[in-house]
Image 1 (cartoon, rainbow, N blue to C red):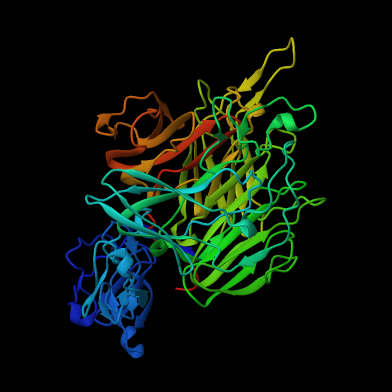
Image 2 (cartoon, rainbow, N blue to C red; image 1 turned 90 degrees about the horizontal axis):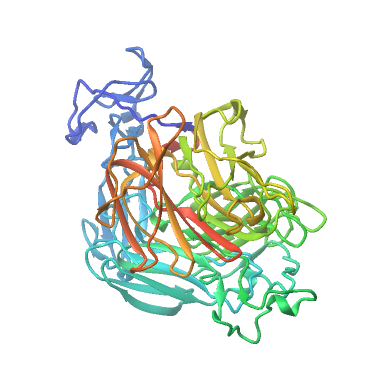
Amino acid sequence: MLSVTRCSCDDDSNPSAGDGGSDSGLAPFECAEDSVQCDGSVAKVCNGKGGFKRTTDCSKDGHACMSSRLSATGNPLALGCVVCTPGEASCSDGKASLCREDGTGYDAFDCDVMQGMVCEADGCKGACAPPEVTASYIGCDYYPTVTLNPVWSGFDFAVAVANASSEPATVYVTRGETMVRTLTVAVNALEIVKLEWVPLLKGGDQDACQIPPEPGDSRVVKDGAYRVRSDRPVTVYQLSPLEYEIGKGGNPPAECPVGTKCPGGIVPECLSYTNDASLLLPATTLSGDYIVMSWPSRGNTSSFFAVTATQDGTHVTLKGRGKFRPGGGVTREGTGDITLDRGDVLEVLSSHGMDSEDASGSVVHADKPVQVIGGHSCANIPDATTPACDHLEQGLFPTQILGSDYIVSYPAAVASQSPYVMRISAVQSNTKIEFEPKVHDAITLGPDDAPFQLTVGKFTRGVAGEQNTEELPVDVRVKSNKPILIAQYMLGQAAVPSGSGDPSMALVVPTAQYRRSYTFTASPTYDSNFINVIAPIGVAITLDGALLTADAKDVGETDYHVLRAKLPATGTGVHRIEADEPFGLVVYGYGRYTSYMYPGGLDLDRITVVGPQ
């Protein structure tokens, strides 16, 4: 695996499309190391010193040569010997093909009527047909998937669908061959779609004393996932569950395991206690390569990851880290070779009970695109003694979109600055990682190492008569010489000054995947919602058409700062945020004894290459 640097070559010969070298009008620039220059059908790999490392005559294999260049979204493409001309397309009888942007071959897909697509001889057409849908979190085809969560089943699993287009969107929700719901989402509107839990994936419910049942073994659930399709681009988030309280105002359902039903319990409200939410990625942006991030198992709570197939006949290969509960083709060592059809879910559980195993660092490979959600049924963070546990889940990023430059920002709990935990996994050996400001010495990680874990900031609540102690958190830039994966965790209520919320997990977006605009939603059922905006210093940000004037904190000695803002409690729940330069966005919120956090969005350009060139 190697990282493709954001650079390209000036192809002096400027060959025509006929000999595979057209630059398509994109301006050439300096020939950097490992980028490719074409001389007719010969691909020359630059050494960065004015010469070439090696040359290959592409015509010997019947291929053409295309010089390195920027993609339509401004990201580098290595190219070289190509199988087909990027963008070349065809469609017949509802089966479409499109040459990949890097020219390595054709992607075959269904020209799906439910996504508003029309099959024509020169390709599949429509607002949702590739390449009209760009490589980002905005798309037309998603797979909401229930994961292990001991919350009482009287709470609702749901998805939030926000219309990111300029026309109304018709949305179809299916499970297997069953149509579950059809709805229309107006322009700039948000619709909440409540869905039934999938018991085999969810697991059992905790009791009134908040003691969860035994999570069970790893398993495969046929047609376990829902599928959400739209004829216009939308964003989709899954909420597990939607609410944090049922029956506000003193009218909890009689069946709810309220705290007063537990000996010594004093909480009469019907509270969920274990919530989280996840940004879902469109099926068109998924890949077959993932590194898992989770949290260690403890007692009757379990670290897990869930793999959802988006195509029939998908072969999934696992390389586990730690020990697992066998089942569904998964061994105790976390290895397995499992075949899934579209919508099937493989839920892999780490060992729990007397063990304290962690699925983090496990590797998932599939021969077709899959979705992978990492998480925990109910995690205590930063340690097992910190009250209280909360459900974790997050759609994982494909390895191909990972970067080497990240900014991790602390949450702004109600009227306070909250400490947080970051965990880092490497995907290559000898990965050197540095921090700015220097919250820790530089480290070196490899793919076989456990995730590096760092707590930034600290709060200890004093017992009666004693003062609290606090070490304020800071925002941190993390840079490496090779691609890495970073997750950020909110802490349990006892470990934050406000006493608000409980643990949540979100992946950190590499700066290379920042965008100039985001359409996002914040959960309408939480007491308070916030955003962290990570932007270059001096760049103006507009939120819902108005200049964002929140206080800004510089990130060490870097060119970035972080603006934190509380979102209004009124409105549709759909927001638009924009700037003239790319910036990052984190969305999070708090309810009683619970919280959620997810990235507000990202581009999903493939900036890291997996496997041999």
